[in-house]
Amino acid sequence: MQGKQQNLIGSRFGNLTVIENCKKESRNGNFWICQCDCGNKTGLINTNSLLKFRTTSCGCYKIKRIKDTNTSHGMTKTKTYVSWRSMWARCTDNKRRDYDFYKDKIPYDRWKSFENFLLDMGERPPNTSLDRIDNLKGYFKENCRWATYKQQGMNKSSNIYLNINGEKYCLKAACELFNTSYGNAKARIKKGWDIYEAVSTPKTNRHERAKKLSNHMESIYQG
Image 1 (tube, rainbow, N blue to C red):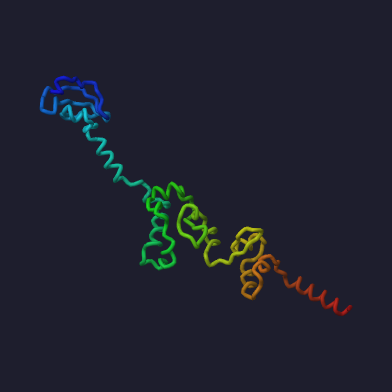
Image 2 (image 1 turned 90 degrees about the horizontal axis):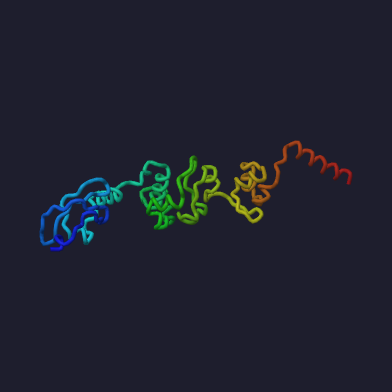
């Protein structure tokens, strides 16, 4: 038989090294005991199983694969995972109050895997949440960021936007740029002001208005 003709002691087959011939013959050859790389010794393995690489470990490799398959990524309690889960919930759970708003914003298939989401977005920094840069579009890498709550507030779809020097600003950000009161700018817009003028025109106090009126009346009197 093939097992009688070959001495496999010292040979390696996957994670196994043959260390002993058991002198037990069968039609599949001799039987051998092997030392696994994990440190365990195997039971009897016949020659064909070794030569055809049907057995390549004591069983530890198979156990490891099963464990790796069923082991969580270990991040289910992190804020990053909560954001990923919430993103899917708001887009797919028709029992949620905000479902109608998000139902057409379903994330790309790539983000069905939390691992891919983590790879694309990185871990969620402190004091941030997941934000879509363009609220008219859905959830995908190029349209998402970890934004502060202030940034999120400025990015609401209900905000008023205007272009300044070719850049898009929401009303609140534009007011900060011009050092203008946000409330005053909104009041002006409600009165029919042009949005840019409402933001860029400084607010005059009573003393300044009185002085302008006095100068105007004086010019009329002198004229």
